[in-house]
Length: 440
Image (cartoon, rainbow, N blue to C red):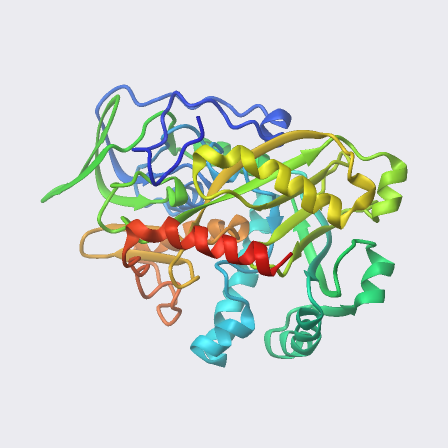
């Protein structure tokens, strides 16, 4: 069964692992469930990038005992299902959109934080010797219309000069000479990285465990209760007493986990297919003969990259409800064939879906209530590999009283609550229908 965060009560520890390419390449170590009552200074709910990063930061600060619980296992959620793009950004607002909303100084500061998130992740991978297939290579943002290509060309100079982004604009012929992908009118190119996302979370989790963090799998938080002496968290195997609680379950959060996060994010489905390995001829025909990653400018974006064994990973926004996830495979395959006609008959070896956390105002948040000693980080809008790691660090810093730049809207305000939350999917269906008609 495909877990659906808006209809199911929560992830079941009995759910099977998703049929991802990553889970076929990595054997994740087991994390046993909690089977007794337990006391800890800091409890982190969620074993993805944010939660493990927060736990690792807490452990390194010697702030007290640290425990992570996950409904299933580290890597079951988005950390083991995403495409492995390491990009400087999060949410759905680029630097120029941030400038329009917040003004230049704040926008520059936010972008610097996003840039720092990439550097922080790369530093952790190196410092902890995490083998996660980290690979540098160009990242292309593909313009699906002539108007988008013109806008990209016009914006490239501002991105380079005002935000220090190493962006180069390419017209249609320049793009085709570098990457013969079909149906696009131009692109921007900048440095990028890709990695195996499951190897990354396993490496981070094992590093945290080696530094004294308790990690329990198959231990969903079923209730969070506050009292004068802290928090009591109920799990199927025992209760946990904690002084501080950090919620890092993102799109895989229990529907009624805690009032602080309930109805403040919208879990949106994304799907990915992976092909059988490309032949050498197909690599040449498609231009996929080097490490490269791409995303287009459609409202319902497609994103794709070459994997180390020459398979093509091709992803995009999925169906609206979890029960319909399987329908996305045919749509993705057609979009892949449109972009790379030489792969029209290419066999698919893997297909899976997952959930990303979308915020109402397209901006992620790291928010901590100092009086109540509880906080959360979520709302990455499908762009969280690097920033989720930074968000976990910032959340832990807030929890231990370390300074975090409160001038940034990322850190100084909670996620806005969705009005008429029960209609979120109705609105999404309408948006997808409109986008599929207008962006053919």
